[in-house]
Length: 272
Image (cartoon, rainbow, N blue to C red; front, side, top):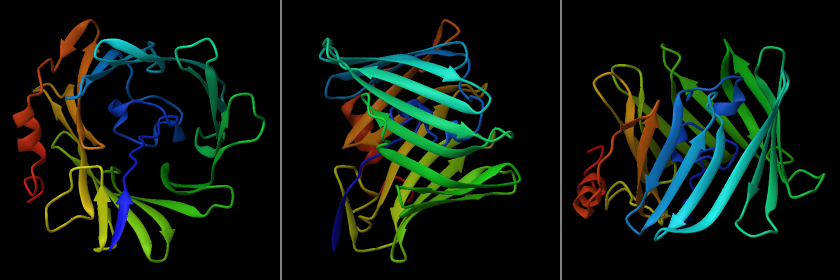
């Protein structure tokens, strides 16, 4: 039996909040979240994250609270050209704030071909993504790491919707990510599963007592008009609530109760 600690990163520059629900936002030029001005995320254990966005959908500020006390206040700015997106993050709440620079390099078609991540003032990248492959305008695969040791492979349905991502560490160690959509084509569910039935995910609520190598990471709700209103994200055993402020109007404002957690993520209740 192999025990795995789950670290869930929704890669919008490695630091975007759970609203992303997609890990390839910056692999294409253009944004999918224009019009959202503010998002508030809450947990049962008194954490709250408030994120603010500009008119183009770029994250400008992210404030983390614990029991109404500010624990971190992160600010972002951007340099955007036809061939480069540079995201600069300044994080921390003291005077000696740290910096992180995330750079996406694009072809003339607006497709990413290289990504580098830098910390503080270092000129040496700390994170690498290369070997991006696209087919019919869709991302097919890329590699992660300085020597490309980890490979990611994408699969799509006939509507060109992403339905599966494979995280290939080796011939015997692969993690599958499934994407589920509603009738309007909106992404509603995000599910992670290991190819090894002996794996055990920890720090999250797993699929069932009998299937410890599978976890329902996130699901989202939409209103009758198709507006995204609320998402629930499992991270280290916590359910996050997302409240959206769009054009001055609040969508999905409601409280999460403990029985919501028990019902939504009780063993075997999802996907059975």
